[in-house]
Length: 116
Image 1 (spheres, one colour):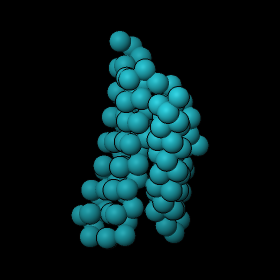
Image 2 (image 1 turned 90 degrees about the horizontal axis):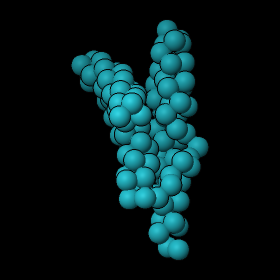
Image 3 (image 1 turned 135 degrees about the vertical axis):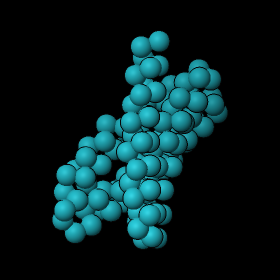
Image 4 (image 1 turned 30 degrees about the vertical axis):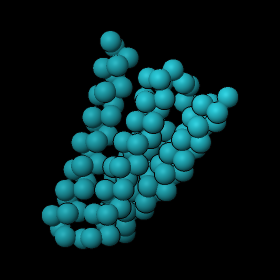
């Protein structure tokens, strides 16, 4: 139970933070930042979901370039440096790009496991 609770709280914390950034951008009506924040939220959820789903059906899925710890570090740096021009937007864009690379890596890895 502890492992499940820990993973759940980790995802919840990440979602709350990204959702807060998304709401901030949406309320300021800045379209580009809102879209990037939305994609970062989607990418973060999908990276975790694919691993959880694969493991639920009995497959290993610990591959991927950009896991939760990397996303948290990049987001923290973006927030810490947010007083500088577009640091948060750049951090979110990095999360988007590398999350979708990781999604592709995980899907291909799971697909290869099911081909055997």
